Image (cartoon, rainbow, N blue to C red):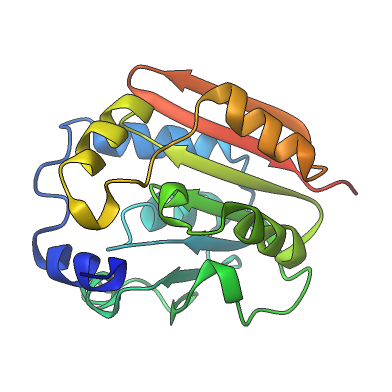
Length: 197
């Protein structure tokens, strides 16, 4: 089973087993992303759009959210939520985005980073589509260890693990990101880095 098929299969029941305070954790992701009114945000691996309400609260009606995912079924579930017209859904792959260079103020990768087959290529693509001084945010609101345990239970994603803070810091530094900040707590993981201005 491919990853796309795996996520298509899970889409209808996605989020049913989430921790009870997931909304608060997602709000924290949005807060740490330093979102501002009117910004253009790329929500990578949007799934059913769990992070979108928190992004919208910050960027407002003048902001734009482009939400991409490799799964048609995940996007179908997200569209059913009736988000406003400044949210655009795109079937796409982070390794080969069709977006123009320097199109976004923020690139948010929530609960998706382990699934990138070529993490360096995905990070280079994030760099390409970010404006100078733009922020990349990689987050896992339930924490690294919980994600890795969960993935280990499914053959299609068993090898998709969240890197330690040290490995993430090294990877981002190696690719010339700056202002790198990594939180790796038992119940929350977030890495934030800036494309130099």
